[in-house]
Length: 454
Image 1 (cartoon, rainbow, N blue to C red):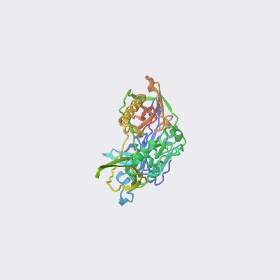
Image 2: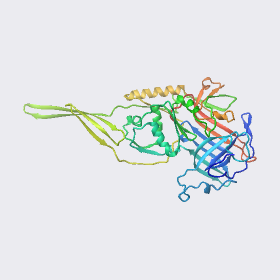
Image 3: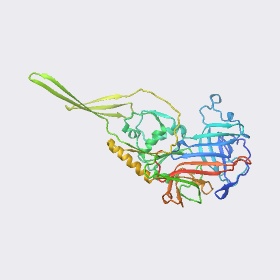
Image 4: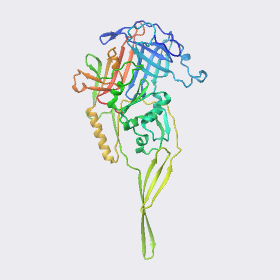
């Protein structure tokens, strides 16, 4: 029996042994929710993770009978002294060797870690709870800072520290960019009202890394090192994970397979080419004066450049005069409007490809954008496939893993896939005569290449 810090096990509805078919065999999976430090048995949950997983979400259902009054158990407010304490939630599931009638985490692995968003009682029958990723504040909170001389890794560690989110950085990333270099092409002075997750995404473009959250940890890793970095992580609450590619055979392992391919221009692909040049200004003034014997024509030419002073709200302008003299002046930009929002961002399914190339003409930018869009579309194959969760397959069902499809009738869809989203559903029959239990399934949407931002 698992011993919980902070209190005894909560009351629960009786857990009768449940057995249902899992792809031709019979499994006895079990699921529990650890909600506000107490354990409750689960008969249904749904988890959706994505490859840029600050937007991971989950929901689960608990019966009304035998469970606490949630308006008391989960209340947060000043009068209770816990106004600033989130309601933490962990979904656990697995195939325990000897499942009993008492809710326990023994033999289970943690499938989701997050915070309670909202719960909705349905009459006096059951209550549905909706969860958000532990990193979800990063997708809504904004940052205003004058400091840009620290690295992208330091920035991620700083923004994750208040939420106690560990950050795993690829050991091969030995020279991360500074934020000054990331935003230099836009002549931005400090970070003003920028969403923290957006800054992380833009930083990952320059460092050539993937950024995602899984099981309460933020990862910042080169795409080609994801497998090795994940294999080096210690075994934690999620149990043993296998990050070797899993081969799945059409007609044997795959319940449903829906592939797609765009021969020319895929609407799910967005290519942006950013070009820039130094901020320069050239001014010329011609002066004509009447003098004895005719006219005197004089021309004055000044050439100016503007450079931001990183870490401040200002910059330096340098002016070169045609008589050889040079002058400098300081300028500042302060004030302006401020705003706040709690509107979340979500996984759109769109793939964003951003390239930063200096000194291109508008015609060159347009031509290169169309060429890249066509090339990516022509070589990308997508697929959505459903699998049953079995004891042997469970360690492979991770958003960081890869899946090799074999046995499908169209050859080019038989390839290695990288997941973009993964939806895990646990569904047991709730009462005699009710809907048939669907068991424990996972639906994966994937593409045949390492992932871009999206």
